[in-house]
Image (cartoon, rainbow, N blue to C red):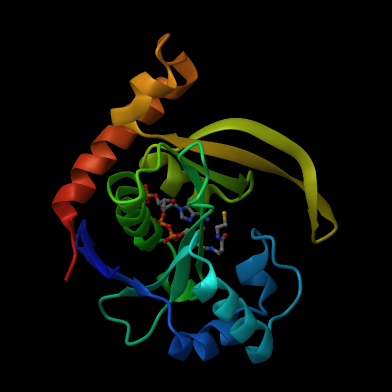
Length: 211
Ligand SMILES: CC(C)(COP(=O)(O)OP(=O)(O)OC[C@H]1O[C@@H](n2cnc3c(N)ncnc32)[C@H](O)[C@@H]1OP(=O)(O)O)[C@@H](O)C(=O)NCCC(=O)NCCS
């Protein structure tokens, strides 16, 4: 679904990622600057990305948006929810903003608001999972802000620039379903995240429109 989120003076469109977006993605997806903190390790070609696109279009359990902020005439990144068929009502999330001139401008924060609301209010997801390198503060700050909580650290999972890096694993817990998930009471390590998640959902329900 198309979503338009206006947050702190920034308006960002999340629209279905389409075939016409692929050449722009390819232009940026062979950069180790962009992919230092993703799972990507090899450069991508138009042929690879067309295959990726077609596979995802056929996958009813993935939901992929192009990210296009006001002021840009093309997509500057991509975000997705995957595994939305999970029987336990969870899914996973990811984001890549490939235009560095749009980093640190609140695009990920605004995107996460809309994507999280869609997962909770439309896909009925109780839990959203994500993973972030410990040396990617922009990514985990944007996730924490909407209520994701770091629950564990995977040691030395990846090598970048000759250096072994750790990975945080995070979970977003639906504040309206927390009693189902934790009838015995929410563990202290999750309470702050659940409070932030409740605020993020309220904010998104005000700030996201379906044009
Ligand atoms: C990581 C990424 C998604 C962050 O997106 P963004 O739009 O720059 O994030 P935001 O602007 O919403 O920033 C969120 C917060 O983190 C801060 N932040 C962003 N980058 C930061 C950095 N390198 N160091 C410290 N803080 C940083 C921002 O200042 C902001 O906090 P503030 O509002 O208090 O200032 C983006 O840089 C990106 O796509 N990078 C390449 C791919 C990648 O790493 N994807 C994520 C894999 S898990």
